[in-house]
Length: 393
Image (cartoon, rainbow, N blue to C red):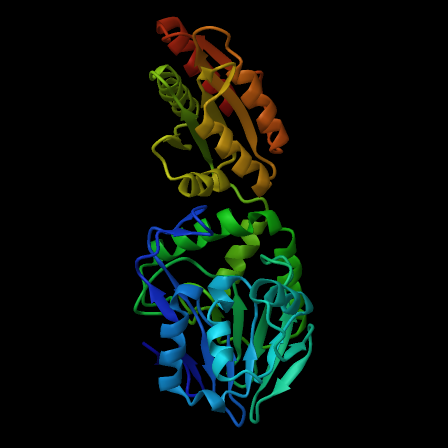
């Protein structure tokens, strides 16, 4: 499908209802996604981004139904990642001399991935293309979330094409924020930020300030995934500012894996202690062996503290906990508290290992942790409750 956003701007992307895993298998996408591509018609016609590689032929064929490909005067590649530029190779087979406007890093990365040296035009912040009655202004956005990322802004229509910023993996046939379920939209927007943009939070306020300094009106934000923000588009910018500021709610996440349910019993008793100490606190429990890790990351993002538990196995920790802590380390959360717990039968190293890993992840570790030998008895269950109470304090 294609549809008009304004008289001069048409969405020509792809809705992918079936997508369930992304970035290889690293990111879950329970609600699918979209690959948003935009065609701007004026005296000069410009195509902004394309679609993911598996849809390259379908994308180009449908684009050719929308416009004679030879009438595309410019292509803008805001980002070289293949979910945005994957159809570029197929498109360039048909219009090989068309200029491609991108950042310097964008040109390097497209060449490295596609092994083609097309007619690249390097742009930086403030550079413009005159389309006739409108201009396209480029704004570099490195590390939101790749070194090559950039935005572009269409004068006359006051549209910001923001690429990965302000997007969501969210398939929908009604592509505007005022037409979709608001709770679903913000769940996916937060998950997207927590799992993808958290390591680059320090760049968000700078980029927002830089855009504000341009003093440009804003009617629409058109990201590369998910809905177009037309109803109060600045709401997502304001939300990003909050999320970038070491965001946390009155919540604790208890995250664990268990072999014979002893560590699970500890987790549930700790949760009782948390609740007894603060009835207003949100408490989330996640068994990593059966939970979606990206959903858990989203809850860690929202939490002011986490408690991580693992049984001891072969003088180490369970692989699900080890992998999850490696994921957390890369995301670089700030200003969050943590502590470890776990059960054991022989040697009992898991709590010490988890404690050290939490420190490596940047958490403020609040205690030496809590260990339970074999199956927790009533005295140990009481200790777990007290452990939860002390963590709240």
